[in-house]
Length: 265
Image (tube, one colour):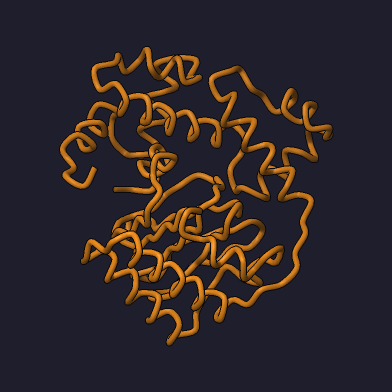
């Protein structure tokens, strides 16, 4: 499973997900905690306004409601996602505080977290055992990262922007109308959007629409590819194929075949 596929189905998941694979996900946020372990040098990670290219065996953690994006550049990573249903003990400890840093490079802490992830990948633990792993991993993360008070108004604005784009990505959205909706000068808003997400608006919308296309085709594999793409907000077949091929380096039809043939899906 890759991260884009996970994002298309994550709303239905209420247990820990852990797997080895590549990651290349657009900026997004959710109630779950998402952990990425670099298995080789060169894994790009960004959480809110902090970014780092990880070296092998380093870890990045996206806390609940953090806006995050990852790109392993086709190299494998370990990915662990802990849903809100297993975070009650962690949330009781941290209360209104937040992780002081999303990055862990303490070798001992990293190896302990990695051991937990590998056990989850190799075994099929019960829900109670998963809760134990969740608490162990989050305890190690708190020890490594620390907790602090944090407030960033730009994060709240960008979360609202992401929500709006997610809910309205099938509509005709442009920079001028979006900046006006959120009360910004369009030039300032464009700079804020690009700085925060490292994508311009058109590229981000294309990624959201591709994610929604994948979700729709998973729900109805017999659906017409072009018709589904247009219903997801692409304005032409040519634009859809160009964006999809740029993102996945293969045609939509070829990609859908890989999903259907993947035994992990």
